[in-house]
Amino acid sequence: WNLKAGDMKIVKNAAPTEEAIERVAGLQDGVAVISRASGQIEVYADAEGAAHPAGTLKFEPLTYLGEISATQAFLVTKSGAAGRLDVSTPSQPKIDMLPALGVCAGKVAVPGFAVCLSAEGNTRILRNADDTLVADWPAPAQGMGAAFIADDGTRMAIGDKVGHITVRAMPDGNELEKMTLTASLSGQFLAAAVMNGKLSEQDMASIRAGATKVDVAAAAHSIALAKDNVHLAAALPNGTLKLFDLKTGAVRDISPYGSGAVMEQLQFSPHGRLLAAVEASDYKVLSVYDVDNGTRIAAISLGNQPGAKLFALANGHGFVTVDTGGRIVVHPVFENPEDFVAYLAKEFPDQLTPAQKRYYFIN
Image (cartoon, rainbow, N blue to C red; front, side):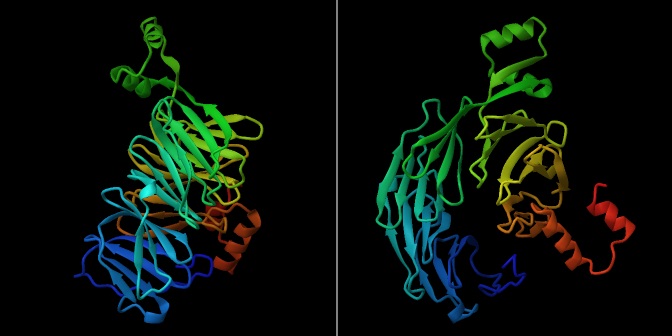
């Protein structure tokens, strides 16, 4: 589905009686790869049409499949073994294993590199061009927390379990930024911390003396880096979103939309002007914030999209949520006001009604 052009093509025809498809990757030149529950890999190419695969390969069940080059995909089996699928000849797919990456618990492909996080928190990066292991970073001393890799493969943010976040250049590993997160706990979040034994004796003494709020080190459970190399967002367990300006060191705290909500997923828009967050409480909401001032500019219910995953449109025209049923919903929220005006002109060639004006404009 080409979101910019608005056109869609069938990669393979529907076949409800076939074995379930668990993983899919889109490569260049109209080639798509699917992996079934049994591990069988099928390659579809425009030249062969959608009725039959151009090539097949029996393999192990996968937990990851992602593009690493124009004709190759990085894959990881359910046992954690890493490999590379080559479909330069779609009718003859082949797999080379990548033992240098070890056993992968976390994994992702970025342009030209395969990244593997071990169960112990070690980070290994393999350069696809020559199979060189260009990074083998030890686990954070305080344990591995959330991590994020920039789409262009140039930076990685790694959090530990006591609130430290380090931003490194990839693949050389140079430390670019380092920060420590703190959160103010009160109400239900403070009660949960007390019950789970997460507070220091000093904090417990303050509570026994009557304190209803304490500031503690807090590990991020979700991190996002903007492509502008300026902003980093971190979601904390108490629901707070911290937005860092990496140039000035300024930090802004943003509270979630719903009472007791926790921000589960974060995505910056392509130019870093907007930040989208999936917020969960008794219901789920997609909130979109203006990065410059922290203002919430949109709150969209995700109640009809169970397990929705969040993505940003590459053209800056909004965000996409994809639910467990396969439904794709595009949420038009524009970085550039001129793009918004062009969208309205296209979708509503006649003058907007008063009701539409109230819907699309705050004032």
